[in-house]
Length: 309
Image (cartoon, rainbow, N blue to C red; front, side, top):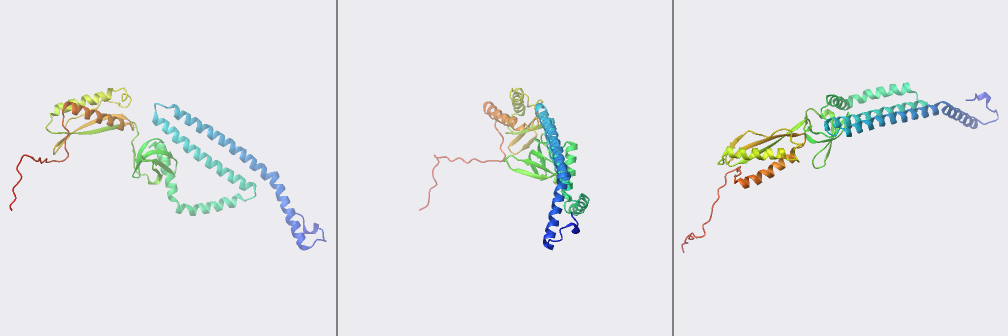
């Protein structure tokens, strides 16, 4: 900036002020072009390179997840990890760009960081749940409690994990509703997709039926489902039929337990019900009744009661 003594003495005071401002802006612009703009360009180039590297590794992780056709759990782990790496890396890249741009335009970073620290301290008292969310998310990830694609029960909700970050978990239930659950609300996790599931069907039979004959029919049906080509890869062990588990009123309960692959119970249970209906009709085995029913039959040949005139 030029000193006032260097300004032409013939200029009025207002024009001297405007000239000083103009000279100051010109000097600041030149300094920005010489030093600040190159810093921004370098920061953008570095951020672009970092973004390309992050996208490359995320793409590799997702391709490896797609390659694990026979190991759905490992594939879900890789997809979850890729999503967390992507979100965290781009957050750090964005923060780096903001700091470099502020420094390039002349904002004092020391004062900014100190102010941000004070503001962050104040916010932390009112946003402790955010830190709890992230801490819980880290433990869920490290302990491999669930991954994207798993069917879980958590925070009183049941659904498929569609997305998982360090702060939230997104669940999609059977009717399409999307639940967004903060990780700090997760206290107990029930993973329905881990390793295997147990398909249990309680068959209600009339207590008058021969239990040995009923067990024989049910065992034959369950083994047929086990050996069926459609369910051969789903059912992973022989069905278990322990016999009469409970007698209540006019029904005897015969439980059938089948160990199947994770989250593959419904198809097996539907097929078992279909075959049991056909087999019981063919073998003339009566189903049980949950309550007693009294049938009153009307005899049309009976004389109607006479009425007094």
